[in-house]
Image (cartoon, rainbow, N blue to C red; front, side, top):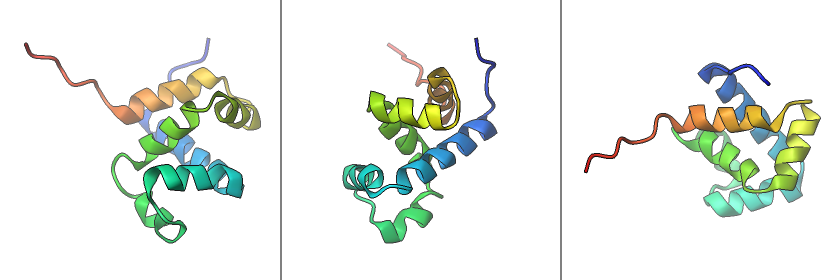
Amino acid sequence: MSRAITSQEAEALALRALAFLASEPERIEPFLAATGIGPGTLRSAAQEPGFLLAVVDHLCASESLLLEFAANLALDPEVIAQARELLAGPPDAYDP
């Protein structure tokens, strides 16, 4: 079982995921199309709240992409799921 990661580690992992996506046009183009972000504004968008979560969500939406990224870093895919949870923040409390 892997150890729990910190919020800072989750952010660093998401930035590595962005670099992974950006390293190949066939990886980054679907992400850009899904988010509506252009290549020229990618760097500034990375500073926006929620952007890193969108990067990790994009990875998690494709099992093959997720497994390729995890294998490249020799990570258990569960670590990426932990990063996603940390980046998403606590769930909104349901108040009936």
